[in-house]
Image (cartoon, rainbow, N blue to C red; front, side, top):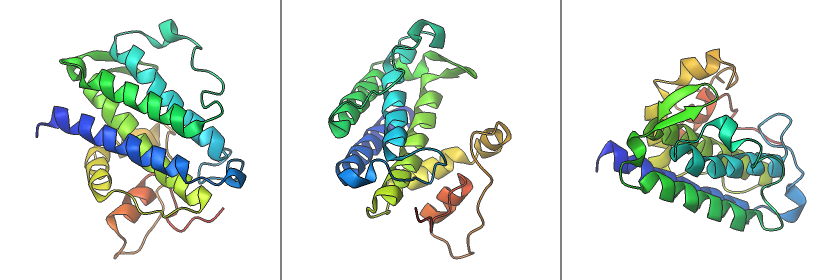
Length: 195
């Protein structure tokens, strides 16, 4: 499998895992704390669904200014899981179009290939899925393949993201920590977080 098709497949798997995590959120947990300071479970979910909604227009070549505020506010509606599934499938479809991954995407912090953009949003899905599972009391185990692929991508980006303030300081974990816990710690998460 090529790198280009790999990221689309992984992104699709990450969307599926995120939607499953949403379906497991008890009604009482939507306003509960998450590992993302200042975000409750609904705000975190809204953020990630919003990211998926941005993918198709940006992959089509629109700028952030051209998209404007169309995705501001609540994008979850009455059925967060259905909204997440629809947005995720649309994002995957946009990335899977022939030649799409080679296009230039204009982000607020620079221009990237759509392939690189897909990796960025994929990583957000993996980490925020764990955030939502931790916040809602779900099984925190992530897809091993998604963890491995995200960690591989993250190796080249961690310092830049941290330097830009996009992730918090890395958390120290023990020498025998799992791959999942090492990845979470590198994104500034305490794998043992409790709300």
